[in-house]
Image (cartoon, rainbow, N blue to C red; front, top):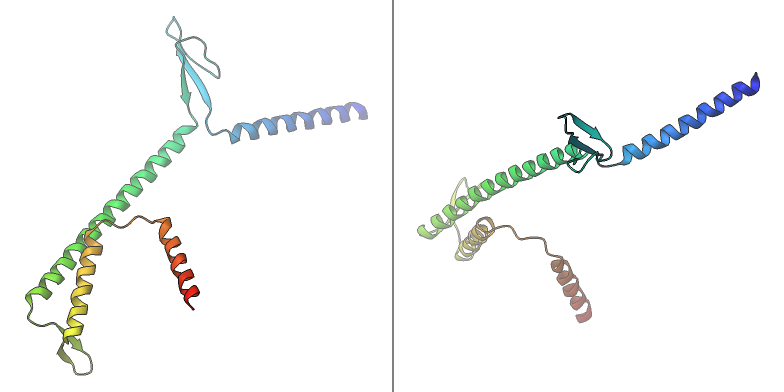
Length: 165
């Protein structure tokens, strides 16, 4: 009696191991290939192998991936659109500022201590103009793509500085 019980439990464990390993390999597959075809009597068939030459392969497991990928692409497009709109607004604001600077005979800043406007010196005015031009250039042109050579150039400049000393 004990040997029969031991045999049954060993068999059950073996079935459990085989079943769990087959489920693990099935779960790890990214897509499941299923074939669909219609026979001569008009009945639709689905199987893991094609039943005849008219069978079409279906990729059932990939639907979730494609929906997620499509949503990510939509999210990226929306983010890019929002960034583009923000850049356009900042571009226009920068152009307006530069235009005001060009039309004004003098530039002023507010002095907190004196509680009044103070005229900028010629040097400060030039600095403000340069900054306004940089702002227009930055916001009105597409953002630069990251470039691997920028990092290399920085390293080369650092090496040159060390060699000079």
